[in-house]
Image (cartoon, rainbow, N blue to C red; front, side, top):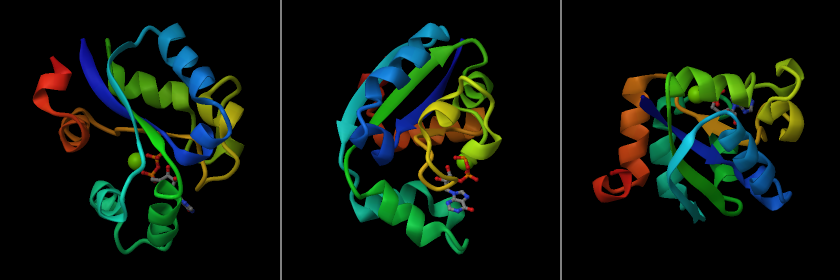
Length: 137
Ligand code: IDP
Ligand code: MG
């Protein structure tokens, strides 16, 4: 068993797709370890996406991620990082496989409904960025 960090992004929360996405999470065998709704501050979003600083889409990404509340999740299952990225689908919904979160709920490469960690190392960093140790027991 291992863990990954997920975000249901502002577009999906605003469109009423929390339930649809949580349903996909559960249907795919993830245990939800922690879950919280939060309206990110600019500082929180900038820090979370610091790895993308300097890229052309960084400012747009920070504005998008702070426009309205998100849902933060700690997810657990076998091969959690790769499996959640598979369930999310490709970054650009135009390239996402049928039945994936992004094919079902994303509207563009930027407004793409969900986040998922890209490695076990980053999953640990991202989980610690948003959750206290006591919430992850
Ligand atoms: P990922 O979320 O699939 O891991 P990353 O390359 O890590 O994709 O990019 C982080 C986020 O930045 C994406 O999920 C998306 O919201 C946004 N993003 C990535 N590339 C673009 C782009 O070319 N235009 C606008 N936004 C982008
Ligand atoms: Mg990424």
